[in-house]
Length: 484
Image (cartoon, rainbow, N blue to C red):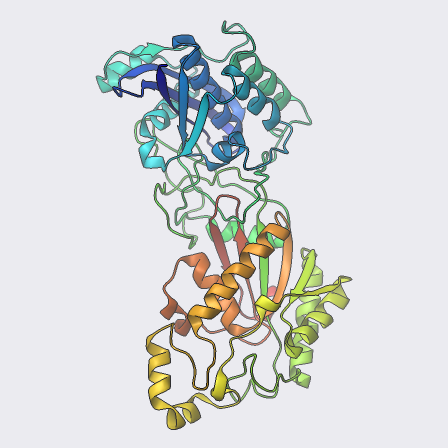
């Protein structure tokens, strides 16, 4: 049986915006390029463009040999996971595209693999060429593309138009139907930047991509703005506009001068908007209000006296509750089991009209024999243990406390449970200094020693938005007064 490799990509400069796709079919044994396809789609979203690229690639492979086996490689984790059956497809615009793609070849003859964007440059280039041609009012030309790059001749493929011919149930008719649906007032291209959703069954964080809106993360210029928007408007996501060049797929950010930090991964594409992954799970992270130990800067973990809030701490919780009520974005409240967090959460939840759920994994680190002591007192009494603790995340506080490494493992597992449970929603997590720092550190991809370089005020707020492709964006408020 003959075997083909299909590499496909698609992108939207605006999401929704001017969009196009590219697809390449090559011989799996020799690596020879056998066919190329690209088309300007008009105004639509990243995901529609990515699925259109997949359809064009599968159709081209079918025209070459309908009996072949096909291995699809794309930098869109959304498409790969949905077509592999691991993520659900809920958005009405995506279902017909996926169904058409599944019908091009019999079940079992097509496999899918996610690849980083730098390994998908050929399809990415074709998609950018198609978008550039559309901007000029032209159709993409395989001849012009080859002439510009002096590449070996490959068989061009007709664009996915209603007039295209192909095998029964081929991708062309499906793509045309989807584009017609997108043009209707109820379609996702009518102004929503989050036109497609991932239906992911695993936690996720923000993706950045090239022409294909791929899923590799980048330190993109609009990340912190998007995180703030996620907190301000739960369940929505505003994508930054894209700009790019045909050959390289690189571009400039739509919101220069803003800062961001995201989990680093391969295939980053600075300046491109994130993949259209749907609304994130957003954790608004609230440190509890002051206790009698807080102003004295004493160690207060999960193994100590479990103090309640002071009068000042209760007032801080009330102010935070009012600030969050004005925003109206929190949809659920989850708290650590310790008294100070449950009390803070209770005050906020009462103002928001919500119930409080308790999550054991959000408790503070157990500081062992250091509980109730100041840093100076610990240095005086346990200098060697303190030095070891400051030097290694695996070191435990004196008396069998919990190491930061153990805390990080617990917090990461808790994060995964909660992102799955609250996908697409905004949830307030009322917890402690170490869990909040750990969540931020993990989202930033920062080393363990970063814990010692952060400061969180009592009743301070931060936020992390987790997207369906496994990336995250961080927003730091810190002082409650910043919400006023």
